[in-house]
Image (cartoon, rainbow, N blue to C red):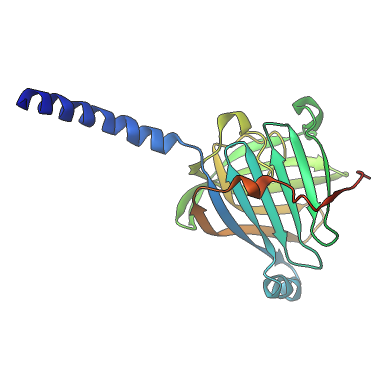
Length: 220
């Protein structure tokens, strides 16, 4: 009997490192709240307005589904991305309508002259250690740059690593970015989105379903 107990204990001890490893490798599921601000020359008034409106967005991540609720301004909108269906939906709560269309193939969605580089900079954001990276690309005859801080502990499924909706398509990440600084050549300011709250938790599938009383609109 004692030998059986010892064997059982040894089996449990052998499983502990494996369970810990599985927990660390699990993809993130939960809610992240971001605050939007603006910095640069003569932007104090606009930044104060953004803060007064509590401008920003909330990101919900669950396996192969992402939801982003935008807040601030005149209207609130929601975006739902369903990787299993290769579809994206935009929902307008003002008139209870939505529009949906398939995600374009990777070959058609790559940005021209997309460049990615590591930046030797780290910071702690919302309690998570984040490493900086920078991407640049051309759009509408201007050079766009996004510097972001990636929390690798908030893992993204490998098959969706290049489809995180808060980054340009084709930018590969291991974890969810918790801070983004977006700027464009010729503009004297940059827009900043930073996480203020990270809540790992199980999410209801209903979050990623369009309400039944919403009507479908034609994409224009």
